[in-house]
Length: 216
Image 1 (cartoon, rainbow, N blue to C red):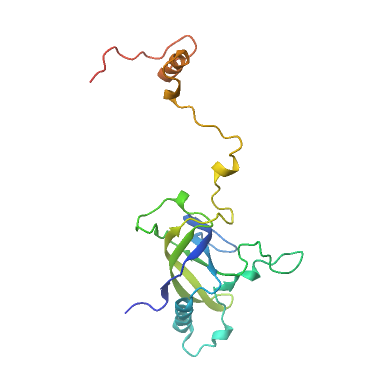
Image 2: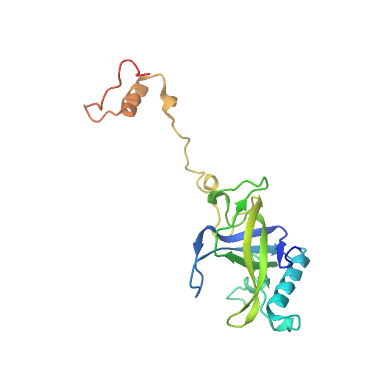
């Protein structure tokens, strides 16, 4: 029988990922692997709600007052409030989204749609993912339900958000130059000077010369 507290999310926008190096937050005693996930308003989160409910029953019993608990899925407009106007800022990436945070004490698998493990430079704030998560109840500084992270699958690239990946080709395009490779200057006088530098020339002295005949 499958665990009713474990569920796969719909597509989310990943922000503030720490999936390859653990980090600490607030008063936490030990670092963890974590990320925050943005959900579109209107996304089908019924399976997540049910898993959350089952986690509450598992921790506190079926007679628990569900309205008295703290829950991990929140309205993004709470985070999008403009300090000057006191109203949600439409330019904030939390605006009109739902969001939740999930973490793990241990590093979780991070894969692409081909189930291949991917590196840190492929994962950034703004990419599109689905997450495999587990809801669990807690009784610390109030009663509630939190989310444990079990695995992440990157679905697609997206607009970088929250200090995410920067497209350097775009932001520096006005003064970037094409790379001058070793072969670009062959043949010619300049290439001879380049060859000498490649072989180890230092001033008027040479490093150990290459043998006339290769030793193979």
